Image (cartoon, rainbow over all chains, first blue to last red; front, top):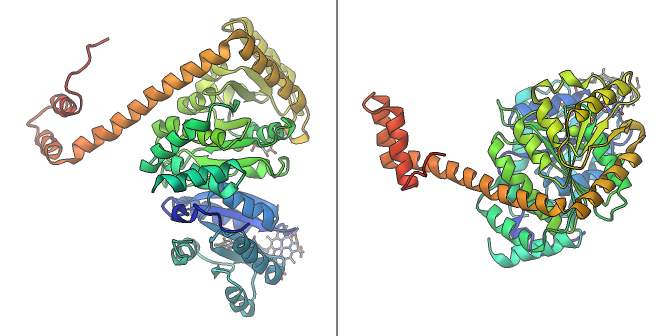
Amino acid sequence: MSETPGISPLSADHQEPLRVVLAKLGFDGHDRGLKVVARTLRDAGMEVIYLGLRQTTDSIVAACEQEDADVIGLSMHNAGHLTLAPRMVQAVEEAGLGVPVVIGGIVPAEDVTVLIEAGVAVVLGPGASTEEVVAAVRAAVARQSPAR
Amino acid sequence: MNAPSLDELFESARTGNRRALGRLLTMVERQDDNAVLVSERAHRDAGQARVIGVTGAPGSGKSTITGRLAAVSGAARPAILAIDPSSPLTGGAILGDRIRMDNNVSSSTFIRSMATRGHAGGLAVAVPDAVRVLDAAGCNPIIVETVGVGQVEVTVAAAADTTVVVVTPGWGDAVQANKAGLLEVADVFVVNKADRPDAHGARRDLELMLDLGHRGDWRAPIVLTTATEGEGIDDLWSEIERHTSYLHHSGELIRRRCRRRRSEVTDRIELGLRDRALHIIDDQSGESTMVRVERHELSPAAAAEQLLATLIPDKPPEE
Ligand code: B12
Ligand SMILES: Nc1nc2c(ncn2[C@@H]2O[C@H](COP(=O)(O)OP(=O)(O)O)[C@@H](O)[C@H]2O)c(=O)[nH]1
Ligand SMILES: [Mg+2]
């Protein structure tokens, strides 16, 4: 979908409370971390739209549009991040959403720069503290230019 | 914000642009100054959709049922508005209704999750506005899911053409506090989780209660469902259809909608007054009155009367 005329001046302005879409892409069943993150973000005053397991880039984009989300959070544990994360970023760009993609889970250190270069906003790993999770999401949203 | 872009937004939403509709819903959800403009613009095209409320205790299966209903409705563009409580402590919320819906609904179903955002009174305005926007965008039917624990939530679900109340075997305890309120608004009862023991017992309880008295000439039917398996959902849909035609034939539809429109005005006045009331406290003279109360120079009663007088010159006579 291309940029829709008339929407840009009214585009998501990232007012509080932030609305966050959380999901797992594909067949990766590790959802413990995502559930922890959901509670963490809720406790930080955000509205978490929890999609859970087995999502596709299409279903995440659709949810983002319908929910007018400010940010997408994905959790990845099945070593598919180098393919899946850039695919998500691309889907977001194609839809003209202009929302940042934040990732957590198991990402080897050497892959982090690759993902950042591919357009992922932040990558967090095991042991990320509550404060780090909240700060990462807020920073990703803040860095996103308000005029989409 | 200027009018043309709002028109364009509505135009896009009408042609099925999810992002445009998503944005419009955010505007009414916030209930800021834009919300009034959006609400007014939506009013022009709204009034077509059928509104179905689904309420019941948390975990009773409302979301699973709602997703399935949207699918069996056979409608081209059904919409779901799923409302969950915000945390009173942090204002945040986990909106987990989609997880029970996504597998069952088609991509043409528009799902929006909404948090109560602390202000129970605001919900009574934000929800009708959201329904109005979905309606103006051409969605039909619009299914509104709310947790049936508080009075406001039940009232919100009851502001529908047809209200479905979901219970489960052994449900009585879960909604004890508001049992009467729930029973009163039901047009159709669902006993969900019929795969569990004693679903028939739950049905019997409901029948007994209905025997004690139901209002009007419509007796709420009771449908047993196992929503996770999709069992009984067709029956539920046909009872909703039957209620819809009852609404049409009896003239009840018009009466209901008239009542709904009136009460929305009342709700808006209440909310607007509360907002303005808080403003008069904020300003200079309000503050000095407050300080006098703090110093025990003025009684709270007298202070409230004084401040109210600046808002509404003449207090209406006591009823
Ligand atoms: C628990 C666990 C399981 C459980 C999962 C239960 C569940 N429902 O989640 C079970 C037993 C089912 C399981 C199965 C498998 N597992 Co496993 N599992 C783990 C284990 C031990 C812990 C994961 C966990 O829950 N951590 C706790 C949470 C809180 O931490 P977290 O997910 O990292 O999240 C934190 C951060 O990463 C971040 N974060 C995470 N997501 C997000 C998202 C956002 C938006 C943000 C901001 C932050 C953020 O914040 C969180 C809080 O700090 C890890 C090893 C490890 N040390 O990580 C292996 C691990 C992930 N599993 C692994 C594997 C291989 C598997 C299996 C394929 C095979 C197997 N050996 O059993 C299966 C696959 C199952 C499937 N269908 O996908 C590998 C993955 C290897 C890889 N990616 O290269 C790991 C790394 C073990 C290993 N060292 O080999 N597993
Ligand atoms: N056994 C059983 N579980 C159900 C049924 N319907 C829903 N559930 C489960 O009950 C839980 C709550 O369902 P959900 O639709 O989210 O309920 P809600 O909180 O009322 O919206 C989920 O785990 C569902 O899978 C049913 O008919 N039978
Ligand atoms: Mg629900």
